[in-house]
Length: 171
Ligand code: SME
Image 1: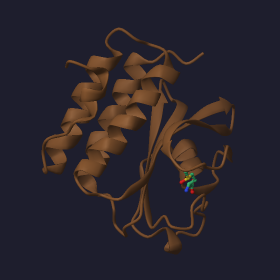
Image 2 (image 1 turned 30 degrees about the vertical axis):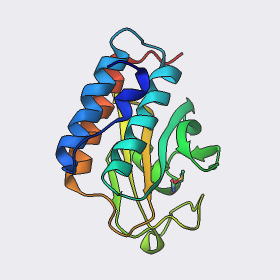
Image 3 (image 1 turned 60 degrees about the vertical axis):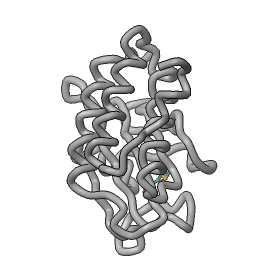
């Protein structure tokens, strides 16, 4: 890559391929960097540009990080301003954090405990980042379309979460 920004060029219309490139580019970018702020900032950008190149109207891509025993705090992201603090068990992010299971929400209006940071969001995926049984944080992606995410996304983003565990030091 001639420039760092070139990592956000995704020349494919195939979702699986594009998400595979997110993983490859994340690996390349984190190969000599273990700071979680730096790595997750670039990861949120990779996710944002991958979906936008696929014409998936993602309106938020980023991270919430475990800040104390049962609390998530807003981390690096792309998109509009979002809520800062979420308790484990609350909302889609808090459920992914407490249950350590990916949450696929095809219609946020039908979800009993969705926290609406942006009234325009229609669907969401939240993937927990878990190391040795402890939730370090979650990947959160919102979409302006209903059913914005599915199994292909779950599979790739769970692999991204594993890569994050391997590459980031959380201080
Ligand atoms: N919708 C999330 C809150 C975070 S925003 O989507 C950025 C939830 O219900 O946990």
